[in-house]
Image (tube, rainbow, N blue to C red; front, side, top):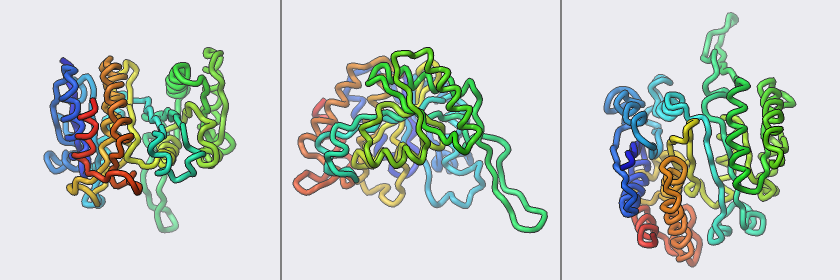
Length: 352
């Protein structure tokens, strides 16, 4: 029996996670689910966005299925109490340093992309984002008064050689199972951190002679993802750049509601979540797209639970549901069948 920590979080997180857990229950994969509050829900329950009991559950679980956190109601809280600190705290506490964000265009959704179908048809790229370093965690950070009046805010971008080398290995290993190409993205023409990044990734590449390595500045990469996204196979980059580029890549696929993600530690234990947010504007309306969460569950089965066949069943069922015309509002086009969260999940479940 494999134990799954279920952390729905806020907003639409509750709906999409509930639909996914119900679908997983139909697999017969010997999964045991235990739920706990996190984010705004954690703050309401205990005064902390990452309650001790929730963190303890995440530590002892075999994998974590995460929804989304955040709500404007909590914007006035001190930074340490805001819902978003929950996911940052989980990544740090569990050593989840490698974020895998696949972006794949299903043939049926090529017309839903922000780009012309011929530009994105057949797109299948993987963004490997480092998760526990960079400007999100660097010290010192804060807001301070200036001697002449006014204030300044400051954050520190930092990376160690060891952190860079281990994420590069994840990217090269992933590329070996794909098209054997890695593009390392940085800002080495401006940032000292990026110059170290480029040097270490290039050095690590010597141990992977079968992998083709290229380097690209982040601004150029952002442009190339729109101009010619199929030139990429695996993109490896730091925390902040990866955060931005993966959201950009989501629109190539038709909707941010389609993109799953996996955050892994050095032993393969992981946290699995859709890359979208909590969308409080549509929470409780039953219209959110559950496919990114369902596909995240497939990644969970494959990477942390050793259930590749079950993962393939879910991915195949998603493709069949899309081929049969089922669409939530974010990917709806004329001539397709518009459904809500529960009906989309049911359509996938029926095709398992």
